[in-house]
Image (cartoon, one colour):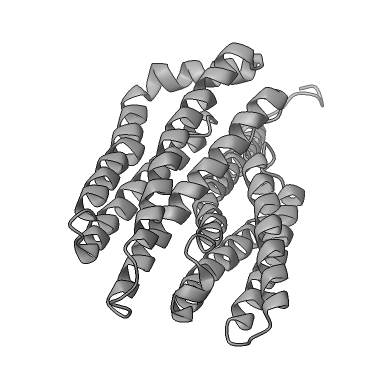
Length: 315
């Protein structure tokens, strides 16, 4: 027998080694894909906390500062600071894992986490000034926190945009992030503010009416932004963006319908009910309706983040 020939036992041994090696390669590839999907899934939902943080901070500017109990600002700013810190920590933990090969990468995650950390620091300074009479530092820290928060929010949503979607899709991503943040901030701010009518019985109802009026306007703008987030990539977007829109309507039309009905549409009805209730006026009944509105907004935003994860369309 030639030296080159192999026995059956040798062939079995080499086949077993090859099969084990192939299984290991498949296992590594599947694990990498799983890790990438988990990273993107988590980053999509962490965005909700960032939107709440920036939108809530924006909502604090609505009631007149010197006419409202300062406790409202202290408690509300604490909630939005916690949301901002949650976003920073969550993105940082994802960055420590190494990010995802197909996005979001570790570098973009670290950048967004750093921006949210800076924004959180300035909001913390603003919160501190609420126990002091340093009006100049309060105004500057609030404005800086709002500006840094907006930059962090845009950086946060942009890291979720797949490569090759182009600048046109980036506009849709930024627009929907801002309108979603305003909706979350205004509805939560209005709900928190409604409780202060139990503390200050003489506080004018017009303050809460202003919240409700602005919330109604922003909800309509948000619906327009959601339409643009679909229409702009479909008409002007790259091939990848148009394919994502096609996937949305081909496989997720039911999810899109539920996102719109249980989110902005249902909330607009609740806001109209709040407006009618304040004509009585019944501030506590309106606050109860705002509780339900907070839940409808959260349901809509969570469904929107799931659509973002599945199709890359920022809804």
